Image 1 (cartoon, rainbow, N blue to C red):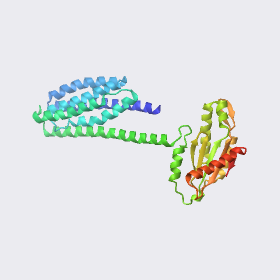
Image 2 (image 1 turned 45 degrees about the horizontal axis):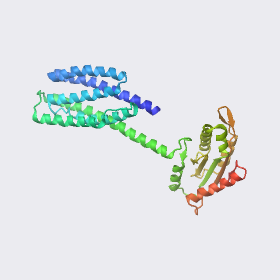
Image 3 (image 1 turned 30 degrees about the vertical axis):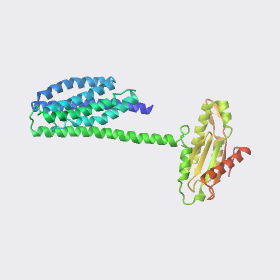
Image 4 (image 1 turned 45 degrees about the vertical axis):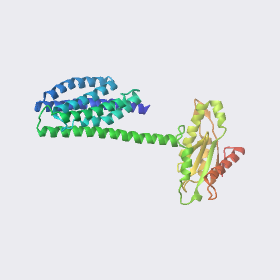
Length: 342
């Protein structure tokens, strides 16, 4: 939900930015048209001022897709008229290139938020054809106006700076999207959605690449919530999810120097990776859970856990190491539960 709101705000701000940017460029190009006596530029800017002012109103009314069409159209119109009036030297044509990342990113945002977008490929093709078209025109036709080199230099600097700024801005957005998407995918792959702790996939990968100075100091424990099925049957699965989330929080809090993951169902695995992860914390954890008050919809629920733990031995591979801990857990389950078996 927050991402959707942020994207909607971004669509609004980007569209509004371009609308205001176009008004600024109108003032700049109108000044150029007046100072260097270029009627075609002036007439175009008069029209653009009306269109761009109307466009600000559309943006404020949240007509973002219509506004985007207007923005692309007036920029391309300025590009074409600029080349016809002064040739390719002032670099109006590079606005067609600068718009390409805008088309891509805005199309992405519109699709995500508005559920509709401008046809991506046709829009790109139009810009490319206009870019090629103005070069072809300039190859066989002289500019309408013979402006001094100072005007060309000013326009070249302005057009280049504007285009580079736009490209850099959207490259920054794409960069952030790529990083954010990777982080979300990584979280989905490695974090259990319900409890917020690591999942089985992460633990297995971590064990395979775990490096410690003294492997014999490592230990692994499997924690299982006693009679968890009764919780679901008595209070419902929403309560069961609540219990899983709360137990995960307690395990993570008490075993803060260990790797904690949800192994599956109501089972959790605790992996010691440092010498300070004393196995006595497992008994502390068991007691804390048994004494904790779990309240769900006015019901007080008492929960106990059984924990099976085993230290690492060089003759054990990872699968057999986990299996040994599971055997300890099974022994505890069959001998009264609510205990730690080492």
